[in-house]
Length: 149
Image (cartoon, rainbow, N blue to C red; front, side, top):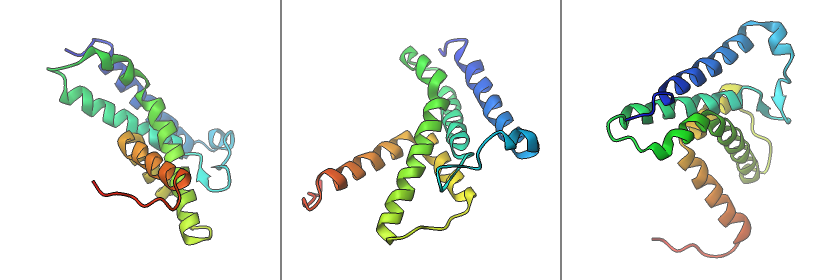
């Protein structure tokens, strides 16, 4: 069974992330304390949406594996929103850079696009790892033909 503190911790993370986003959107003084963007393109809300994805996948995992819980994942669920925030932000940045390279120019997407991308990478870190693997192959092995498995 799931450790007693894991589910309340996941709910607390969800409440915290949602509260920060809601306060950011509704309290101008709070919003003014943050830059609008992280760098020239990425909205400051991107890590929060990545963290939200991390919260939701953590809650789904807790629910799905309540009866066959592996205690090795206790710590993972306590940091999952932080990992989601980081993978969401970096994944969004990598997607932006690769898109700009492919189109040979800046792309124009509204902040909701970046937030959605961050949520997906925050929720599905396997997609983030796949992006990293693909980019590593392209950058470190240019011109090497790929073999299909």
